[in-house]
Length: 129
Image: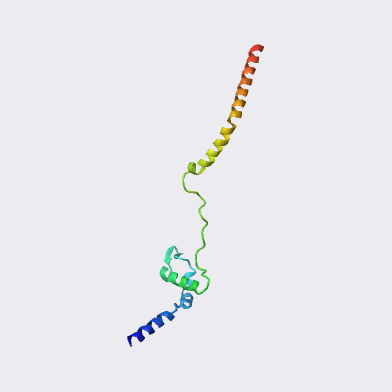
């Protein structure tokens, strides 16, 4: 006898469906006001449905294959990078330094040539005077 009673309870619980259509009809206006609450006449009003019940209603509606239009818009993701800038650009700087070191002999020759030309100009001016 007890086994039959337990089976009927399990069957009733298994067949139970959350009445999301009725709940949605009841709280449709409240859900459209926002996720957490809304401002009314300068005062913050919380929603008439708790977050737990709202989440359950959303879950049941999504499981039934319906869309949930009451979620807030997603904000744009942060574009600012975390960490120190010097750490991020260190590899770039090392690569640039390696390129400059390869060009160094040419740069030194150009420097010596400029210095020599300047010295020659000064000597010419000294001779002319």
